[in-house]
Length: 470
Image 1 (tube, rainbow, N blue to C red):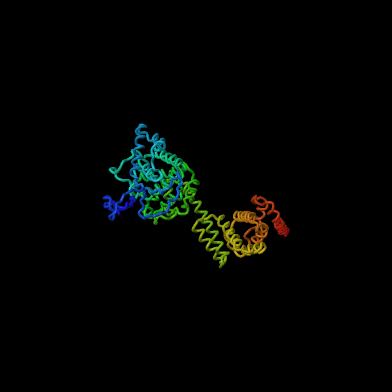
Image 2 (image 1 turned 90 degrees about the horizontal axis):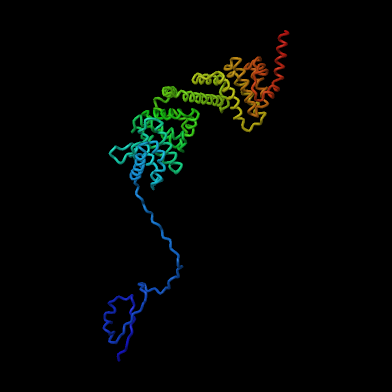
């Protein structure tokens, strides 16, 4: 007996399965085919779907879109904008540069990425090629005006003011300007003398106008052996100093060099065969920088005095103190080398002995320290006796002793004892002590020290009266 077989047709089965069933027979039985809306699931999973929150968007990870590095396009865009402004302003560079910041603000340019290109265009009129040199005229667009084409400083100043305006709007550009200046310094060999001078003037004006360029980032890069050996750097810093001193003081230039940490490396800017202070002074005197030479000579002189004082400290209070004769010979040799004034030498010798004793006092109490000072002055009195050979030098030595005792509390009560020790060994004379007591003293602690020395002065007066009576 034929039975009616009902088969549910689901969408997951392949069509070939139902080819025979379409004929109405299945294993000899009558069939009826019905379709069912069963979801397709290849894995035949029976898990229920998790509920979802309507209206919530799932965050998807953003892909990093790599923008190709194209400085040439940025350079061309800047050149086009400035050239159009230059033409609109009747080819007036001053007006064009005054409005340059506003002109560039109108365009959407990536200054953060191509800041160095901006300043290269300002300096050379186009983007610089590898090594920092200017490409040939046939390569790329060219700005009709730039710093290297200027004929005088007044034409360069507007560019620096433009840099200042750009950096105020975008402070991150100061690092790009520093990198550009460094690149130009390291590639000075590719430029002629006029272009080198223009670069030096532009850098000088950046420091004067306080654009934000850090001296310690830029100036040390000039100590490049390759350029120093050729004398290129010596010529460059001469132009830099000359322009800076045309409007600023020598003290300001020295402070600039101190910030750049090159104040003690000035000779390194010159070739090896010219690294002497005599050649240094002659070079800058010929360049018309006499004030700078005089200031540097004074600074060098003070440094040599400090070296002399330190040398005396080591010889008198070091681990192996020398004899007075050996110390005196070393001092005379140093004096002949550096041409010191006698007054400076006497002062250095006294301070070297006393300060050396105080520095090595360690854990000694005040009384022990005072005893050590008097002992060393007596031990090395021959050095002072040899150098302190006039009444003027004796008076100056007394003033030095007075000031030293006033400024160091450990010596405050030792003034009269020091004078007595030096009088006993003939370093100080009777007339010098009386002169100091009457009118030759320094204002620092005068009343206190005069009172301390009063018994000795009275004793000297009494001894003089007794000699006269005899």
